[in-house]
Image 1 (tube, one colour):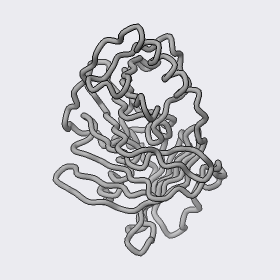
Image 2: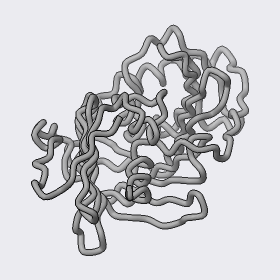
Image 3: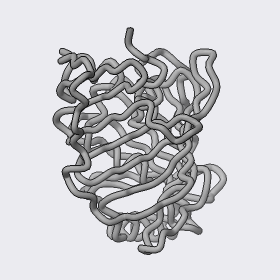
Length: 268
């Protein structure tokens, strides 16, 4: 029997759980005056040009209130661009219950409680039973970090949020998904990021609830992230408790030495 509860905790971290949930609404906005337009454009340019970390090694607390279940679990999250991921959910004694590693193309999921290993590709049916197809492996780092990949500014339209605390920027990516991003006028940080399916459905809404914590390396990373949207059957939160490093981790960390006595299942 698959340990779906812990698998779903991992799924939450990579912005998943494919179910019909609460539908987010599009933000209300105001048109920009010429003076506001002169402020909005440089703000986005500066945000895109700000140097960002290439990796993360951190302790997190993953919380969920989904499908009638509510709780949280401590975990270790390790990321390296473009798409390397290692996630380890731990018990109260800090023992790894579930470990997931991925190089962006393939993944290995180890359930230490039942001695079972799942392996497959990130374009497999199994993977997409947890990760919506519009979410690609290289998206995860940007979503969790509260920043954006390189993009063409000319394709972006902008407006003011109704409280006049920030600017909304809207564009379509190469997959025809529409992005709504809110940048704070004062802190210059991302506050919200909505991802819309081509049919207009808000698949994900990411809200960055706390100011970015600055690590010893000088890079900022969101302290608290809330995730809702039609792909989530409730609310998920990622609380970054301690950042150990933004130094790129070795590729060997994202490959596991598998116990010989565990059963291995190649999933389609």
